[in-house]
Image (cartoon, rainbow over all chains, first blue to last red; front, side, top):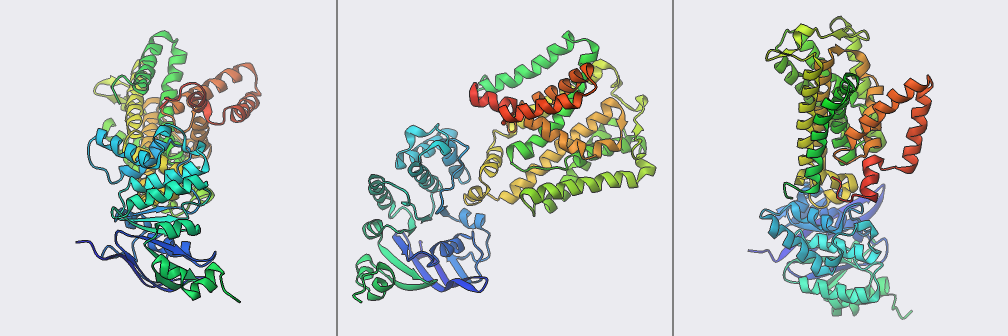
Length: 242
Length: 314
């Protein structure tokens, strides 16, 4: 049976030479939902998901994923348990073809026939609309397409938890609309943790929002609750009356 | 991938070409080609680590030398039968690769280059230190009587060529196959973007260690084969020069291509052979050609061919 919360952190803390990027973060992520993590620049969002995925070693605290304590597992082991991660700064295999990029993502977990494998890679590419560019070299794609490729690589891993670090950064308006559709279509299939600056994306797509400010959780709630929260408005949305 | 795919045909064609060349070439050149094939095995081993995994080692001479001394000492001091000595040579290189790999892989980039260079330097000094057995710089000769296998005298031109070709073919086909497997493709992924590979759930450390071990084993095959076929074991083969050579061969021929190492060794061998017959300043000629190639074909001969003409080149 799936847990209600696929991810829980307790007291998660990261200290960089005396400055705490994250301080005692207790966070719960609901299964099968889209949760957005927002906050001003430097609030510690990327550090937080870095500690969740294992890229960044936590100074203190515990990470529970899918009912298991993964605090001491290296990044690749956590990924193997079902976390997919897309980087804030686009990180694809730029010297390899689009197809091979997705194939690399899918291959680790795939156990079946070659034809089924090709189908799976193709399906991930279709989903982000890159199927007609499969043989192109990833580095030759436009920036927006590279971001979509990253998402396809995430999808191809069939993750239980899909962490997207600023996926719409650098996308055109029309691409953003498609992106919102895409991630909303994933709801139920997987759990999405979305770091996002674009409020339109957050408000439209997210079921829940967690606001980080100065390394600590400021507020958690539905989009409606968050947009009416005065502390959030003061710290982040900048709509203070003063 | 079908049996008659272009890459497969190319690989078979290369091997057939090497067979045909033996009957066409005068003894001087077929002798050269035996040596080229053995050195190409060494280059192919290097290519696994540098060309596919993206790890630049400056100390591969230690694996070549481990194969060479493992074989040579076993035959000379131990009187071990030839095939077993050959396996001992390969095993020595493999063992060394496990040890050096586990330690050197704690570093990356320039530090990795320096650490491998230092390990190789240590290996060279060890050879000199145990001069009583290794005969140090002077080296030792593996006697003709000891270089027979199943009644065949390996010192004849034909036996030498055939043995070199068989060993080359085994390594060539095995490595061409290896780089097509998921494991080989993951090595390429590590070369292209290690952090991304790790964040796709691949254990990059284990993959890199395996790459070093395979690379070391193949270099060991070359070292043992060199001693077996040419009958000489010496500390020169453990010097830094023999660590730089495979890097040059692979760069020239095309890093991360299956035929690049052979082409690189061939090209370099005949470049030196030809230019030294024309002038005593042959190193100058070689240097200029290398500079030109790096400027105009930075991906090496096969790399450029793949980029410009044959995108399917394996």
